Image (cartoon, rainbow, N blue to C red; front, side, top):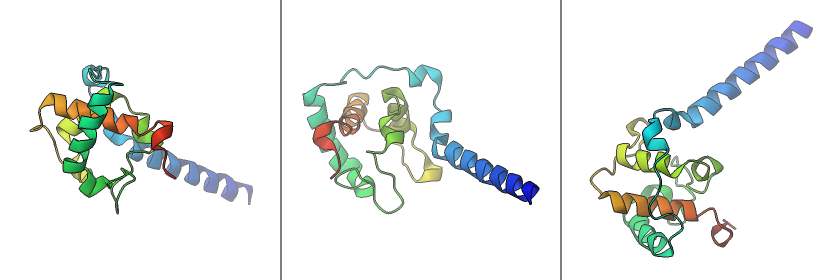
Amino acid sequence: MKNKSVMGLCAVLAMAAVCLASSRSWLTYVPEAERVRVNPYAGREDAVAAGAKLYQQHCASCHGNDAAGLRTRPSLRSARVQGAKDGELFWLLKNGSLAKGMPTWAALPEPMRWQIVTYVKSLSGPDHERK
């Protein structure tokens, strides 16, 4: 009986580790040089406003008008996204993740991608908390 409990606990822990690894897997592909890039628009209200417009044009159809996610597309308000570094989000916008259904936005000029990152990161503030 004790062995079955230990085996069951090990199985649950292994499944949790796989889920955690897969939920953060896109971060593992980000090169360190990209991960540490600094957002030149961080904290700028004009960039948040510009990023909000770009978000509505390019992102809302999958992630929702309020960035809370639609269908199988993730919320951009989640701790996982909000905890990501700006450089990681910028890299994801540039490269996409086709396996997860995220297209590449490399055709958008770099300043526009940074503005989208600035907007997405602004969603963690108290004025943007989901009710």
